[in-house]
Length: 248
Image (tube, rainbow, N blue to C red; front, top):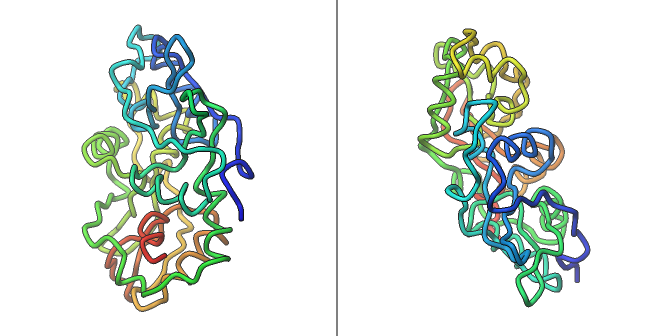
């Protein structure tokens, strides 16, 4: 049986006294959406995520990560991957820290790495309509980067479908905001950028009457974390890995 040990990776780790600008840099350049925070004894204190990093707009700041630390998803190296995924689902995170009995970090594991294995070993029950989220926060191409930044802060969602005249034309994610060089200037008011400048236009979608297993396979095939749920040209909802794991 596959365990957390089989998927362990080196994960970004911060000290409690490290600045948020350092955290922002790590999360912008790393595959992880969460960075884990340790104390002076190198014990796990918690984590911060990309949304937290976006809260600090200034390129130079003395704000530390201490005020943003949240309780982290932590597992043992021997835990089965199904247990690890269940812990991630509880905390709604995309990764988990692997710790020893003294709570020292050994490494981490990504949900994106576990998910393909889990769905290959387990048939997800139900349909997309059974697990999708119906309250979808959307954006328009004309929305400013600042507007979407604020919306991410308010909702904590990782991505928004972009609609133009009620038709799906793209998707914008917090990763897009972090990685775009022009975004920081837009957030500080130095330039005006709209979502049309940074959004992705190619969007993978699914119907509400499709089996949950098909949605899971699409997430794996296209390496995305969320799927807009469509009925012809109408957006009905959105489904992500966490939603689909409820069908195990």
